[in-house]
Image (cartoon, rainbow, N blue to C red; front, top):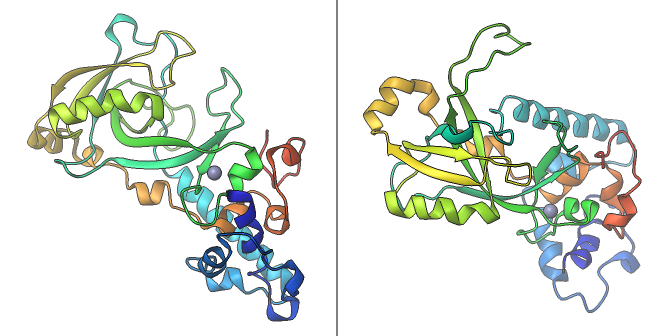
Length: 288
Ligand SMILES: [Zn+2]
């Protein structure tokens, strides 16, 4: 259902002089045409929408600035929790979840694209939001040829000590660090049971186990250890006990923002499929 909608969004950002002739407008028979046509401009900054024909340079600067802003935003977020196979052994790895107080507050769920991972190379992959649940379709679904994964995101305190080699804390041992904890669809039911049993994730101390490299990167087995009371959580962990602001960690992009971030060519494509991008090596495009 996504591909037809894609075509409808494309003509809108142009300046009046370049307005698309009627023949490029939605073809008859596309059921969602009126919806997509009216929805497209909502949420797209006017500056990004209106690009006078003689100001292409300004448009490029604007796109680059936005791209840098998004990259900076992401760079300031905590790392994602990751376990090596066999790490922790019989004792597992202990984590404290800091999300939420009581039901019915819900954890943060979203669709996420992840790609370009090289097996055994931590941090080699890329990720970005999938907006397939919106009305405009998702440019990354088309570019990558597959849909994003449904994920639940929690904030955890990771008690594995580490010593950064670079940056302001180089050489210092960090005893506890705040991490994003990404639970993919198949693992979510295990956490749902814990959530329903304890009525919250906040203060939940768990152990994760990962036996082999086929297991989820957060581990495939979760064991409940204990609940840590709110007062203890705040007194002992202070700022660390504040969960990540997910609206900042994973801001939802508009169709055009997502398309611009991963190669402007996408914004003008009339047909985009996974195969079309398989050999794309453009520097502005994502590695595959
Ligand atoms: Zn997508």
